[in-house]
Amino acid sequence: QLRLVESGGGLVQPGESLRLSCATSGLSLNLYAIGWFRQVPGKEREGVSCITNRDKVTYQDSVKGRFTISKDNTKNTVYLQMNSLKPEDTAVYYCAADADPFGRSQCTISGMNHWGKGTPVTVSS
Image (cartoon, rainbow, N blue to C red; front, side, top):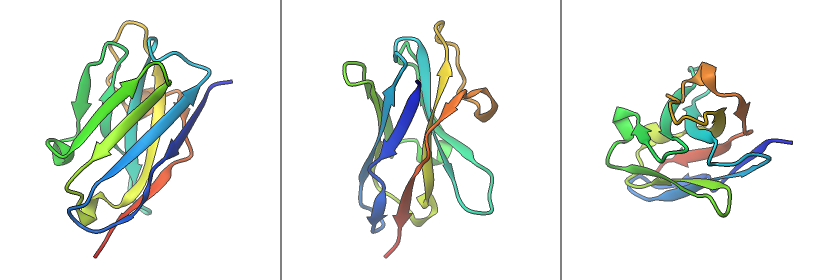
């Protein structure tokens, strides 16, 4: 059974860092794209970053230069390193998977097939 479990969220002060993990099971990162998304209560979910099976990465403009997505195929885990966090980064962060053996996924919300339950991130002084 395919499963994604996020971890690593928490409460930090502005300027600090967090590393989120998305542990996957039931899939191969060689055949799936994994995206990170976030959602603030009352607002729409938005894409943050995406990594394809061919290691093509994309970022939302607001996190470029601060966030880094990576993966460890041996651990079936995808990471989101978040540096220089800002209060506006506060949200519940989700990872999601898109079956994409050809490496063409754009990690659109509608295209993701499987979702984790999320991990909350709060950036506040």
